Length: 72
Image 1: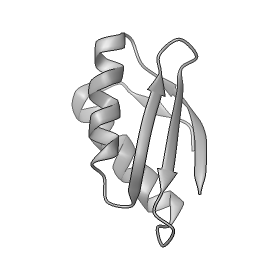
Image 2: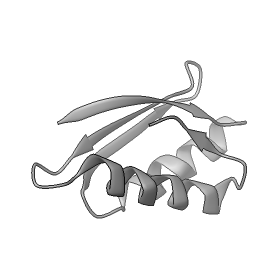
Image 3: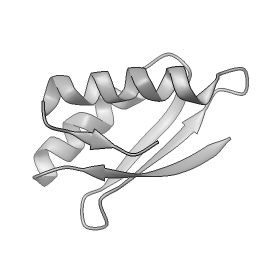
Image 4: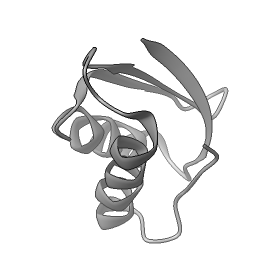
């Protein structure tokens, strides 16, 4: 399953770092952030549940940018 979420990110460099952090979360097979559109695209492992994975993704992204918001 692949889903797209609105994300608040302030700079392209932070977006790249957040993308890397999100991609390392268990249950995520791929993650990409489009800085221009402020969108996060997440491809989930087939057995993963969306809500706990996205909670972990938000936590990982907040380590890069503490005021990061992801609407899920």
